[in-house]
Image 1 (tube, helix red, strand yellow):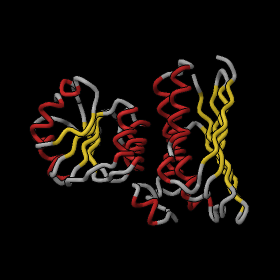
Image 2 (cartoon, rainbow over the protein chains, first blue to last red):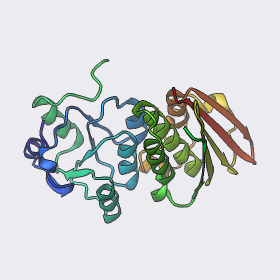
Image 3 (tube, rainbow over the protein chains, first blue to last red):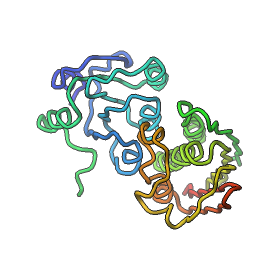
Image 4 (cartoon, helix red, strand yellow):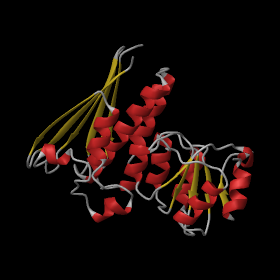
Amino acid sequence: MKLQELQTILHATFVTGPDGWEETEVKAACGSDLMSDVLAFVKDQGILLTGLVNPQVIRTAEMMDIKVIVFVRGKVPGEEVIELAKDLDMVILRTENPLYVACGKLYKEGLPGSREDI
Amino acid sequence: MPNVKLHYDIDGNDFTVAGQASSNLKKVLKQLGVSTEVIRKAAISMYEGEINTVIHGKGGAADVEISTDKLIITFTDHGPGIKDISQAMQEGFSTATDEARELGFGAGMGLPNMKKYSDALNISSVLGEGTTVEIIIHLT
């Protein structure tokens, strides 16, 4: 799924990202507010949907080679978070959708979970 | 591959900078041409260790030794120590503060994750004196 399509599905607002971010293709996603679980269970690099907005979200994504983060529930990241994401060439979007609904909408449109081997 | 030694001081008072050492290690390993899979294991183990050193150790240090066949990361802190190491290794057991939980950690997955992503994990701790955690990851 291209990020442009994802943005439309989630009615998401663009926050930051390198030029051409809309054309980035993502193949899997995970949704979690628990960064330790992201570190433990996420298998394939994809996008992270979360309601947490602190620099550790960006750091966690960095460790997992996740390049796209969607902040849900209308959360607004601070400047520090945005700057860190810029340094790492990450894409940040934000949506008013709650986590469950955002994940459900993307799954329904064909974007699978980062782990489906359970 | 040349032998490389790195030292990182870990600030125990500022949660927002936790992860900088892990980020740097990841970059160094990339520059050294280490495989993606090993980099991932090292980055996750290092990051969990760094977070633990902030949350539980009240700060400390991480020393990294990279040789031809393995990577050794040693965390040392002078925090309160671990009362029962086997209990601390159980998934879900945590003594973390609310502040750590608000940041998405403190769910009792730190040490289990470090064990999962390393090839050997050695912990020694003395109550009231501190903790040393050694992570070994094979490069080949």
